[in-house]
Length: 411
Ligand code: ASP
Ligand code: MG
Image 1 (cartoon, rainbow, N blue to C red):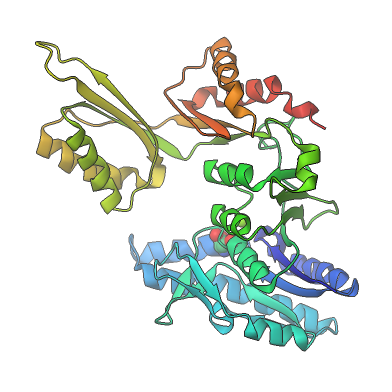
Image 2: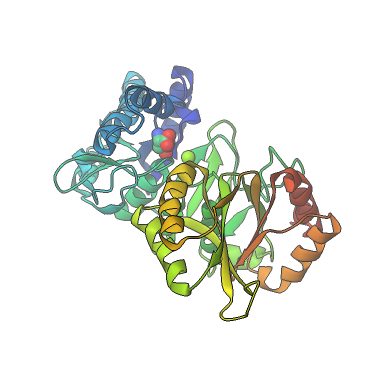
């Protein structure tokens, strides 16, 4: 008998019919003799509905109260699932984060889990109950309700699975696994049997929406395999595992996927006189908690006498931080008498991910060049290369890279 942790996302519990289907799925696992802990998201659309209500009262609602509000979405779904299971003759109990001691820091809206007290969980499992936990939420030391950031239920599930020593955490969603590209955009995309933690983490950070990035970090730290699978159809899904795992060594492929993201804008500043001013720019953004993504710095000579070259800086950041960033940067440009900031909105980030990417950088450039796609920014690491291109070239670029790296044909 093993402890199995199953997480169901918003679409999987999006209606009463879906909740009944999930109840049946859980019972199947239970009948195989396993102890089951379930982590749920709110019913699909609910978190957005709650957010919209708050924003219609105040454009910048209090972060503490937002967390208090958003956490109610999961309270509804867990109670409904427990009711459905009890109706089917099973013993089930729904529990909120504070009831099982999911302790987080106090960063409302993006809290991190510090610890989980597994006493109550184990007690309920011993009593043969199916335990249903509210995902996405925690509680800080002062007993304020916190939330883990959008998509955070994945992280709740992984953290609970790690605490309980589960052998695998199953993430049920509306797609049947991790793909070589977003199948809605690249029809030739193929489902992967397995992928490494490192690759998955990069993909999650790059905009693949299947798993919350922190959940992958957590699983990697605890070496806890994840299985992503559909709650709508049967299948083995995709395993997210350690690179030392035999399964990975057998299947290893050089390039795993092409990921795209259209959530960023590019900001450029020019005629920056010194590195101290560059520092001032990034410090000003960091002080306002604005995350900067890809950065490029270049030097050019002053038009008249050459003294020290001037610095040009381009970087990307999330669209939602755009206005905030501009107001912060305007203070800096005024202080240092810099030219106006330039913002480019219609950009897309295209990334190739895989352990073999290091040796394929030239290929990425030549494929995009053949398609006449201009690259504005580049970033590469051991296992990925990302480029910023015009949004209009996105599909062309995605298809070309997916084809060139034979992702459709992988076995
Ligand atoms: N309900 C939250 C959201 O919509 C958390 C989650 O679904 O993982 O982001
Ligand atoms: Mg999700």
